[in-house]
Length: 278
Image (tube, rainbow, N blue to C red; front, top):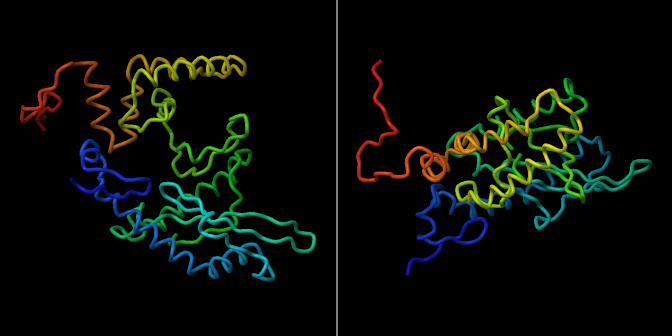
């Protein structure tokens, strides 16, 4: 019996891995690499205190505390370390976050400088928004250093009202027809979405979305565009373009059946390919 491999969250067997489009062998190294990187950050706690103290203008580093690693928060590409700052004089106690890109997730070893570029892009986005869109709420940026939505980037209140969006480096401009509801409505992986499960939630979202749009009466009604995207299949097309690793699974499960129910695996060249004369 083949042994299972440990991933960042749980374990995986060969039978399960061979059905996925992602590089599981590559992912199997993340756990050890995370441990190595977190150990490096732990050993650099004093340096982290100095960096935070510098940007906050603290007179003493003794009032600045880096929380234990058990309280660190990490997602797919970053780790956030909470910093507790004691009250001092008229200044109340504060809590801040210092965030570092995870080098093993952004290709730093194979393409040195990726971490620098990631931080530059995000800091530049915040700076532009502060200057040009001051009404857009963003984290207070005290400083940034080099060499350092997803659902985890959406902050909601107790009633699930969206209050803030973070990680704006992922923001981009689309044609209205390319704007689609989030794939995670059914809490299923992007390449494992069950169409029937998602359709029920999509219908509920569109009804609520339409009601909210009628209240504010925007110049362009998005709910009708989103509904048309679901009926015509634009939803799946946009989703495939946004996720290269899930592209083939989405195509074969949700796009190809709209045009052909059969798929000839034994043919060398598929009808989906064409030769162009240039």
